[in-house]
Amino acid sequence: MVPRLVVCGAAAVATTIVFSGTASAAPIETVTYCRPTDPNLAELSGLTSMDGVLYAIGDSGADDRVAELDADCAVERWIDVPVDPYDVEDLSSYDGSLWLADIGDNQMRRDTVALTRMDPTTGAGELYRLTYPDGAHDAETLLIEPGGRPVIVTKELSGVSGVYVPAGDESVNDLDSPGPTPMRKVGDMAFTATDTVGGPPFVIGSILATGGAVSGDGDVAAVRTYTDAYLFRSSDGDFASALVDPAAPRAVVPLPDQPQGEALVFTDDGSLLIASEAGFGPAESTLPPILRIPDAVSLDTSTPEPAAVDPVSPTVAPEHPAQTPAATDSEWEFRAAVAAGVVLIAGAVGFTVRRSRRSR
Image 1 (cartoon, rainbow, N blue to C red):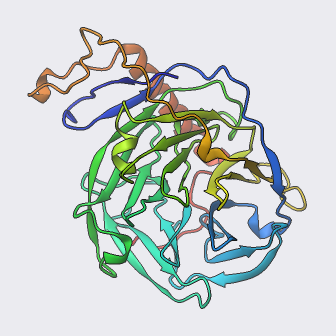
Image 2: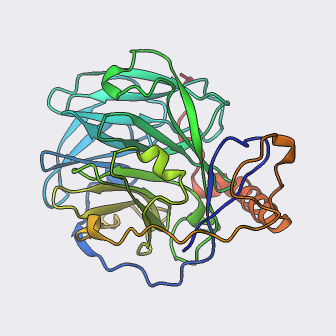
């Protein structure tokens, strides 16, 4: 799909990518890596790999411990999270530590979100709070760039995800604990619906960012939705800028049908593993398999052709926000319909936080 740039509202200084059109390709071929059987992994939301070992975590209600998995996805041991989490939604690793993305906020009322560092051997660690510059957001995607800078991609019902980094571009190793560390917004990336099958019922899963990962060599980053994976290549490791740059090399990969796909990780050989929550079927002994996309880092991530300039939708932001052309009626109607529909069925499809905790 060829992206086109849209400048929205008063955010005239922010770049927005709209991945437009519908995916017509069949899902990419995958092989089964393994199938989890432990029912405590029914809400698997985050995966990471470190020194050849796979780690997994569930989201709210199942995020107080991390599972270390063997080659068959059996749980070798559970590692208690060192601080009481609010809603962990993604899992990454950097410099010998696990990093838990405690960034979920379905009701969008948290004053801060957090990253939790965790030693995979002892379970020791600490909390690092972060604040958005523009109010609360729900998010499920964490990328840690090769230089250690964390990147949070929000999950917006409108389909327009914000991309945020620490305001001082700090590495995770340089964050203050407990903080908070202020963040800044790099820009926006916006998705329109594809026809790839998958995700929770009644939800347009192709517009909701649900997980992220960076390859071991630091050359490729992946952001997934419930239905598709977006691969970005960066020569300098600045993936935050690549996500919001319409000229950045990338590939859009239709994924196999998963009930609630929220996790992915690159393995040491460059493959991409994708995993899903059990969704709405019985959990015991029927957990979705973890699937493998072989040599995903070698998938073609071509620089897209420049989009034609619409005379009423310029590709550069005007000097004054008041001159910014509005999105078309069809765009706003689509996004409003999606947002309204998801809000109405949120309780039915399990987006609400399943246990009450105090806000951080």
